[in-house]
Amino acid sequence: KRVELENLSLVNQMKLVADADALATVHGQAMAWVLFLPSVKRTTAAVEIMPQGGSNDCYKSWCDVLGVKYWRVHAPLSHSCHGTKISWLSCNMSVNVKTVLGAVDEAMSLVVRAMNQ
Image (cartoon, rainbow, N blue to C red):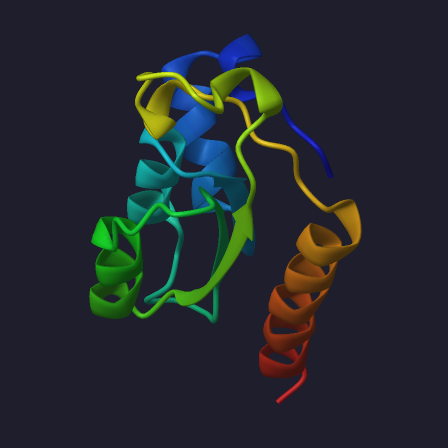
């Protein structure tokens, strides 16, 4: 189910993530939602889309500590960022949809297997 969190109140955002089995988002503040995944109650997963060349492991570390299964997918920066002094954190990415969906499928397969045990 695709949800745009910005259309929900903060309380409803927290409830939604606390009921979720997985989270998929680009690197940045949205990955902080892994803190609300119910990893203590059941197997949960996170897929982070990281800009090519990005090497920030903070959310991977959070997932490791919380017990959230973690996948990372790299995506190239959009052409508008090439040759500029703009930080990669301010650039759009061009994702390979098959690669992202493959990571999401792996994550959800793991969650479903854990549920069936």
